Every structure is written in C-alpha cells, then in structure tokens.
Length: 447
Ligand SMILES: Cc1cc2nc3c(=O)[nH]c(=O)nc-3n(C[C@H](O)[C@H](O)[C@H](O)COP(=O)(O)OP(=O)(O)OC[C@H]3O[C@@H](n4cnc5c(N)ncnc54)[C@H](O)[C@@H]3O)c2cc1C
Image (cartoon, rainbow, N blue to C red; front, side, top):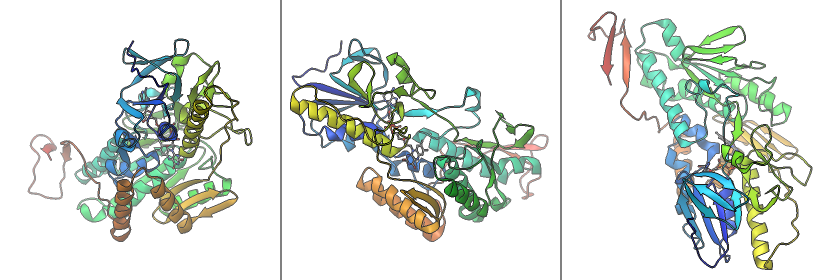
C-alpha cells in the first residue's frame, strides 16, 4: 500500500474543481496533511467555458494550474492522478492500481454529460464540460464557416451554416446567443463568398420554456431576447435522433452539420464504486451533514452530491455556489473536529442561494437575485462583474476584462484559432476562375 506517511491525520480530496479547492482552502494552516488529487492539472471556471467554445476567450483565461492555486498552502500536496474507486470499509482510494489511505475523504469529482442512453450522439453533438470540449466545439464552429466559404452546393452551404443547440438551460441559451453573435457581428468582413449573417441557429428545448431553473418571466425574457438577435427558439421540441446529416425532432428533420449538446448532466461515475444509494442522475444521496451513509468521515461536495438544504428542504442545485458552500462546509466540519480532538455534533448543511444568471448576448442577460428579476443591460453588467470577481486568480481577471473590453469596442473575437491542419473539400463552381478542379467536379486543397 502506498502510504504517504507522516504523523498528521490525512484529508484526501478528490477533485480540484469548485468544491475541492474550497475545501482545501478551509484546511490551510491546520495540523492536517491535505492531499488533493485531480486527473487534470488545472481548475476550470466552467461558467465561462462557452466563451472559449465561441472564440471569445482562450483556455488559459479561464483556467489555472491547481498546484499554483494552492502553492501557498504548506500543508497541501497536489497530485495529478485519476481516482478509480473508493473502498469505504478499508478507508482507501484506488489511484491507478495504488491504494492511498485517508482519515477523512472529500469527494468532489463533479459531473459529466448525459445523452439519455444515446451515447452514439456524442460524436455528432459534443457537450461542454472541459477545456478539451470547448476547443473541440470552437474548432467545429470555425471550420463550419471555412467549409461553407468554398462549398459549391447551396444545400450543403445551408447545412454548414446551420447550428443546432440542444437544451434550453443556461449553457444552451448562452451558446445559441454567442454563435449568432459571432456569425452576425464578428466575422462577416472576413469572408468573401458567404454572408455569415445568414447563419441559422436553432435552439431545441424539450420543455415548454427556457431556463427551467429560473422564474418563468426570465425564461420568457430570454426567449424574446434570443429571438430578437435572430436565434430560432423551438420549445416542446424533444430531439429524437442526431447523426452526421442532421437532427430529427419527431417527424421533422433539420439538415445541420454542427450540433451542440447542452441537455443532460450525470454525476461522475466514481460514485458507483462506493456501493451506496445514488439518485437518478448518479449522484450520491448524502446525509444532512453531506456524509455518505455509514461513513461519517467521507463527505461529498458539489455536483456529485444529491444533498438537501436544511434551510428549506430543497435539493441543492448543481451550480458553482452549491459546490463552494459544500466544500467549505466539509472543510469546516473537519477543522472543528481536529480542534476538538474528536467527533462533535454537526449542524446540517444549509445552502444559501445567492441568485442565478445567464447571458444572451452582448448587453443582454437575465438575473434572479432573491425576489429581484432583472433583464437587459443591468443584468449583463451584473453578470460580467460577478463572473470576473469569481475568477480564480488576478491574471485571469485582467485577461478576461481586457478581452471583453476589446470585444465591446471592436466586436471582434480574438481566440478564433483552429488548431491542426485542415483539409477542406473545395467544391465547384468556385467564384475565382483561376482555381480549377483536378478530377470530376471536386478539388482538394490543403490549407
Ligand atoms: C458549461 C457550463 C456552464 C456552467 N455555468 C454555470 C454558471 O453560470 N453558474 C454556476 O453557478 N454554475 C455553472 N455551472 C455549473 C458549475 O460549474 C458546477 O456546478 C461546478 O463546477 C461543480 O463543482 P464541482 O467541484 O462539483 O465539480 P467540477 O468543478 O466539475 O470539478 C471536478 C473536478 O474533479 C476532477 N475529477 C473528475 N473525476 C476525477 C477522477 N476520477 N479522479 C481525479 N479527479 C477527477 C475533474 O478533473 C475536475 O477538476 C456550469 C457548468 C458547465 C459545464
């Protein structure tokens, strides 16, 4: 057994997302050995992932190495490793074949996409959860315009310039608005053969309103604002199939080359290794003190936890604030028991909802803060302010602010990079008669 020994009790934290980092920080300066494991070397500010996917920001603007975030915390070590499972009875976690002991464990491994049993859709409709997802979507988005520019068939050009977003929650709303904005305002001058302003963005939402987590009037406001900027919003539209040619909704087929999946979330599969009750989304059903049933030294924080708030008995939503508050709570319980030298009565976890917000486009957003329902420019300024404030370090804040200022002034998006070498099929007829087809009516040109 790989025991990272020392006289101090050890807290193992799985996941360097919002929940894991919040927990680690609470334990700073305490007589405890903190070991944080993450399969990636960086923490991602997921609320701004859609801006990387739509070329407004670069990956480094919204991410930071976990090791760097916790570099000032002497009692904390960061290990880049994937945790495969947890053995509650033996108090060990499985880290790629090695076993690591813990005295306390905080599981904060987050969530992943759910395709509702249709995993084969993923290749045509990537979801947005990681930096890799965001750069893949960015690549597909930018390549769609590149291929449309040299597309001979009007039908194919239309399909290349049509984007479908599946799911009308905050991510779907933000993606749909941003794609329409980039097509209509950021890139038209860069293309010669196509009018990117004619790009169609269709947002499919299975429910009868957008933003189901928000008050109904804000969902309606988001729909109106999206339609004002040209997004086609389709409510009560459950997608029944997705393939390389397009999207099917009941009897209707929409030819589309780019689909973005923003419809379903499921908890990290790590939860299954515990052998304890999970909810329908695979989240671990935790006790009021966020511990796993039968394991008072194992806490679950963030998107992996199905937790109810002692405040009103409601389910804690899968949002950054929920994860941060749960992570801090777990850290504080451990800190209190360390100080007391043993177990103490634990107050149940209580979630404080600080509000929700979603952007729709430049100068448009909706925000629900307590009983206040705000829309338009005020909500957008609030959104921008809060997101910058919560970015993890000063460098990210400066970088995001300066990028946004530049975009506001110029409408341009600075991160429009397609990585890798693309081979685009150049179809005839070409507008430029000095380029000729080599065989049949198609020439391939390496760009
Ligand atoms: C596109 C998008 C937009 C969002 N927008 C908002 C928003 O506007 N406002 C809001 O409040 N919330 C938003 N959320 C939700 C919010 O980001 C999550 O609720 C929050 O990140 C959950 O925090 P967490 O700590 O549980 O998990 P995460 O932040 O997801 O962190 C989990 C960490 O665990 C690591 N990990 C996973 N599995 C393993 C393993 N087996 N071994 C080791 N490490 C592992 C991952 O690499 C990751 O670093 C958004 C989410 C997404 C995807």
